[in-house]
Structures are given as C-alpha cells and as structure tokens.
Length: 194
Image (cartoon, rainbow, N blue to C red; front, side, top):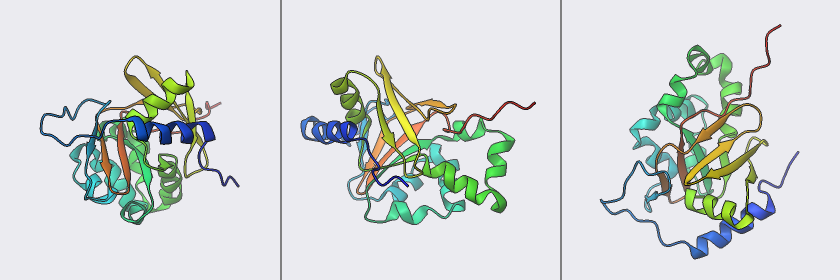
C-alpha cells in the first residue's frame, strides 16, 4: 500500500509556487471561464463551494451517492479534479449505472481517483510543469497516478489508463482545498470485447 501520496518534485514545485504566486482574486471582473484563474472562496469549505457550482451538479450528486461528502467538509486539504455535467453526460448509460447502490464501490473508487491531497491551483500546477520542464505526476487518494501536462496555456490531466481531460473553467479555492473543473471523467479504458 502506498503511503506517499505525492511525488516529491511536484510537492516541492507546488509549495514553491504558493510562495511566488500573487493572491487569487475574487473581484467581479474575474473571467470565471478562464481555466488559468482560481476564484477564492476563503470562508467556505469545498462541500459548500461545490454546492454553489451549478455546472458540477452531477459530480455533487455522485459524491452524495458515494457518501464522500464529509471528506470535503472536514479540516483536511484536498484538490478535487471535478468533471463537469457535460463530462458525466458523455458517459451515457454507464454513468447512470454508476449511481445505483450496487455500483457504489465502483463509484467510490472512481471518485477517489479524482482527489489529490493538498491545496493545488491550476497556477501551482502550471508553475510546477514549467519549473520541471515537463509533465508532473501525482498520486490520487485512490492510489493511482495522474499526470499533468501543458500545451500553451491549456493544462491537461491524464490517468495513464485511457482518459485525458482538460481544465474546463476556472478553479475555486475554498478553506480546505481547491475544485478544478474538468471536461472529461477520468475513467479506465475498457478492454476490447472479444
């Protein structure tokens, strides 16, 4: 069982990035669709902030169904890679099946692969990629790895087993972590039928 949840170079880059980045803004002129911007919700938990993001209603429902809501209301700091509603809709019938009681263990496992320990903003991730001169990898709470890469200003994340997502809109920083909306649910690739 892995006990080291972060790769040392990513953690060091993220921590260094925190000291060098300007404070995030909550001004009304912030473009909430800009994936390179983090909106600050300094007095709200991840759970409360997630409930206020209408484009993440499917994820919020999945977290409730998986009974993981208490994680985001507690004192621990997490980064939630948050597939938006369109990402869940793209799963079709498989996505609907995940919400059944029989599939709860699968749903819990899938959601844990979207949670990173710590408070990471897109700005921190971009800086870590720049500082390293290439992709950075982190270990999720589910024990899998996700790899962040950058093409211009676009940050992508891959689970290394079939799915890649892009940051879909601006992140939201809360008192106990960060919500980073994604355009795709990071699911394992299905083996070909044969």
